[in-house]
Length: 113
Length: 115
Image (cartoon, rainbow over all chains, first blue to last red; front, side):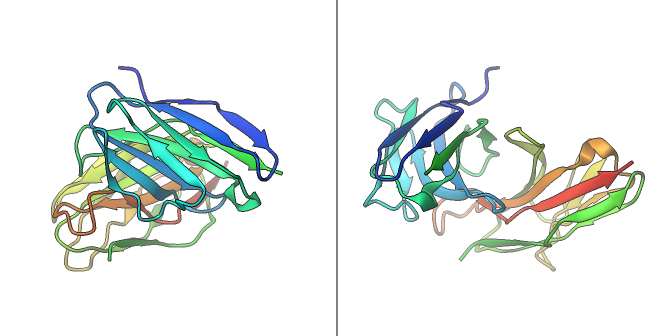
């Protein structure tokens, strides 16, 4: 079974530039999550989708972050404009249903300079 | 609200030593509890889980028991190996929908095992 796919693996951008990350979850998984993991911290949930609807985006900085999952499968997360403090690993995860374990992709390491 | 608190690291042990990483939680309802592991340069992997009180999750020699009375889910291993060096995250996923269904992580505990 293929795992959660994310791209790119690494990205370096200058502050105020834009960036987008892509995630393809495990086939059949209805729930998709985007997490931000700052160095030395645990992952923090940014947004959770159930199929193509948003369940929770309470910790998403909506002035600069946006995410979509238009067809209920793959998803994109965008930052526009980026700030230095956005430097982190962005993890995508999926689960078959809510309250079941989440399976994680390898993440995208973003460095904002 | 829902939260997870883990012991701070790093934890440094010699090979074959006994490991305990403490984890306590605050949650409404009856959450599922998880331990995830992140090896150097790799993504998060589920290590073990427990879905109800008194359940014991186990995998690769690691164990954790869901203690509702103490709201704890401590990770233990009887004899650690160098290959166990990683960051360990305790997490919970609430079952009752209050606050939304989501996996909430602790800050992580880094383990170093010396040969």
